[in-house]
Picture 1 (cartoon, helix red, strand yellow):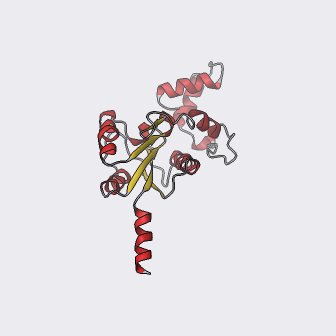
Picture 2: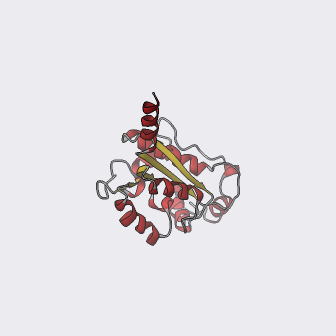
Picture 3: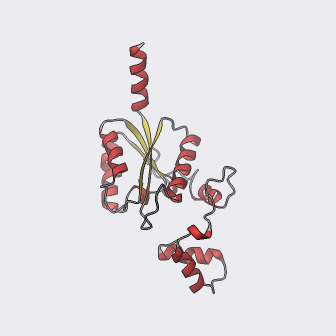
Length: 192
């Protein structure tokens, strides 16, 4: 009986699919942010639809992506060093990190050396298939954001919880013809 238990524990440790979420924020609100919750739902949905089992979340809510000194990332790195993780999935590469040289060190050297598959859903990156996750990318996320997904993964944020800068900019740029132009401007300003 003890051998079966040990084998089951080993099965649960080796071959983990790491679902990594990160968000940098200044508002200091307690608990997980809405964006982290949305990232978790997107990653869970992707993992389930693509047959990834034995998933484990690693989360850094409120940490900058400009360095890798983040508690969730460090826990994930320890598990990768121990050989427990076989796949890392992120929403996009910027969630993994914003220092693209360091990100490249992981994607080009560390992951291949440790036989770890890396998937950045919205960037259409899958190290196993080259850069091709196009079967699940922006169109799926747009459906989720537009509420077209039956599970409603992206909840609408009440106005009182929205970024105050967005409301301020909406007043300043009220001349824009439609919300698509507004979204493009806010994205370019880094607040969208």
